[in-house]
Length: 315
Length: 315
Image 1 (cartoon, rainbow over the protein chains, first blue to last red):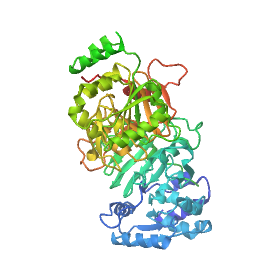
Image 2 (cartoon, rainbow over the protein chains, first blue to last red; image 1 turned 45 degrees about the vertical axis):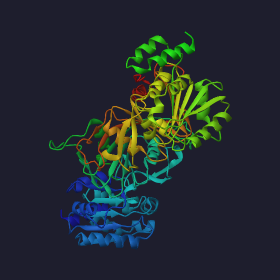
Image 3 (cartoon, one colour; image 1 turned 180 degrees about the vertical axis):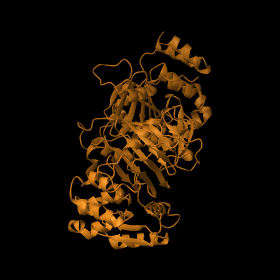
């Protein structure tokens, strides 16, 4: 089966809930999919390490790249900024994809473009705008297939990073301390099944709002990504931090909290929350451990397993 | 032995390193000493909960209170502010004690005043100024005896709270992420042996600087106290949080870090750091557990044991 046939099979499969198994059977993965969750304000002027890596993970200068500007309030400006930097980095085939209405996200031509891409980069803006257009659309299902089946690299910065997870931080006021009403959760793209991502993390002092989300959903791993910093997740395998800041993992699975009884505006009690601070340069294998790479300590490994675990393909 | 004789015995004991055992033998504790570590900006206008509790713990309206303004750059103004609020709260016998030079801190009259006090409140300002005057002085030793032997209540706000511990955060730049050179530690009063206190904690986003300190001293419990919030420690027994914010305990004793190898300006790796967020209203018994008070979960109890553990009396 050649590549066009494989894509045809995928496109035909986009309607039903049994997509996952059938698509996996029809098209064995060419490679592992990568997620590149960027904390916003990634460097576009100097070493451009994160965007350079995105091109490389997508397959290099000839890779077909899409810049998805749906989250942006000014998609033309957002595209122009990325066009310039991707072209400066040698990408030969980069195109914009903007959608303003849910109907556009069900257009078969849009689905085809997503399934044709080797790398898809979700711009910043507002994750609610992004999900308002993509929610339960054929385009969202195509993103899943591209990632899970074709091994397409999916990057997202700021709002684009927040939307990668299944549970998404939709609204969060700046909070000094965690409290129950500090955040609203909503449904994101679901490419990460067991985590919740926040961005501009240390720059905007967002630990309290991420903790507020975890008080409600302690089963999820909290992931705080700094500006000009990226968390690179190789599905099922490894985790790496790129850029200039750090990624903060917040594991509240052992936590004891009073969130159910507390006044919604009062500071929460949260006992036994575990933090892991991973500066840029950190890399861990989570399965198939490479003996040359230091193994993560047990508490961290349990957290990383939540990150690399492949979620269900949403059909 | 009446009270004056007991104080005479204590004063006579102030010189030597064997003070602890002898003083304990000579003067069995009348009551447990309380430490009230305040995160700065405690309310002086409305309910004045924290300062009201300080008076009560010192023995009520007739208690002899000293306001120690050594940390302040304007001790007269600092005293005037506290005089007004303590008198408004009904305290009948409140006096200032200011020292500008180390020599004054060895004046026997100063020692007598400290040993006579039922409550001593350390003002804010700069903890380095405070320790520059009190370091290894007879006044510092008298504070220990007053606390450990006489059960004097010792409160400290902001710089006065920072100085309560043995290892003191002397200088700390605002830091987005922990790094090795973010803080300088120095010697504090040592009334808390196994903790390190930071204040204005969430208001000034100081988790990163407290983590920087703990990367160097993971054996100590990090204690971050919010403004208008106090951590009340009953020596050997219990812990309570008062006021309007929260106390954040940071336990890095299980941590793995790269602090020894890391570049001094680079973000640190810190794995498996445990956080406990205790909002105002929290109270835990640590020993002699009262069955009516909920027991802390094991990880928190281990942290609280570091707080209530009586340190050595420094002679």
